[in-house]
Length: 290
Image (cartoon, rainbow, N blue to C red; front, top):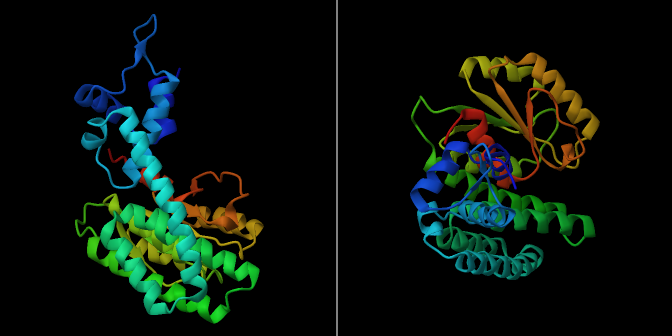
């Protein structure tokens, strides 16, 4: 069994949220130890993981907890099967379809699903197809760049449409540094952060790191997000992040992700994101949003 603090950390939701769910929806239903502290059985933990996955697809807690456990499981299974079929379709589109056809398919998925699902599944799968095509030699550099431009156009449109203009909301800068030109995953992260009420300022890629502190002070931002692709040396990425942490004020959060730092150990004062699905929990932790 898990304590409420352990469950909160595992799910990426606050203790207060867990208690609200318990009071409002009747789930989870914790047991009590001899001291009266909540203890959560593992079968309920598994159910809450399904709830969190469906939340990432855009479903609200009130509708999810109105379903039975079997209904939630079936709903998630339907998305898994749909994603497998979509992955095969995207691979074919990336390799052989016209750019206009690929963009039309992406816009169709954007119009018929949640933004979270579009980012975490559709856009992410197209990026994976680009990587596979480039590695296998089936995709030319010119086509990879052309497809990336189409995806970037769609993502920037989404970001522009949903930006929070409340100056009281936290502000994050999104940037790549020192020769890193692969930025689509970072742009996807910006869209997801903006869905959490964070104001996201998208900067040009490949910014000299020495110029970033001036931008941080000029914008009075609350955080900086960076991405390092597999083309970036993991040793250099760690060195850059350590240096950047010393250059920026402690009040400025640093969030980093990408396959280029997959093997990098945790850096003090820096949040390393392994998966875009973690953005909601990271945003809540950094900016104390429930």
